Length: 112
Image (cartoon, rainbow, N blue to C red; front, side):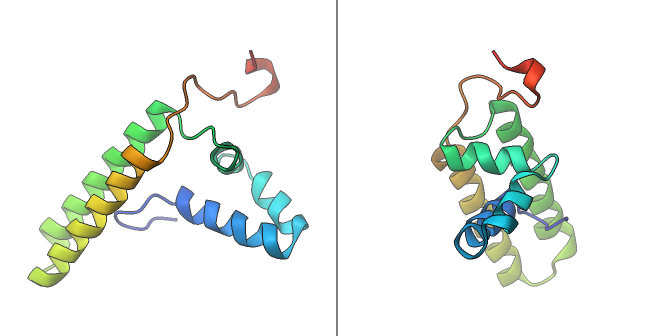
């Protein structure tokens, strides 16, 4: 899924929270998804995001916001709204989402 200016992991975390309340089966389905399931589980457990993932997420957000506000939008109000929403999202990821102290293992062989 590509949403200009927004990383999709947030949507997966919200989906997992909704599924946790309505159906344990759907919650487990989200947590078992390759790629995003572990990120959702780590965030929900309070481990946060690895530093590299935060850097990639913020970098991609900045690029998407710059393209959206600088090239794709003609209306000044929409440009300002896009930049403000992007700054809020960037602030949230940088300051409110905890940074994992060490990379979170992805397989059983990587665990320490």
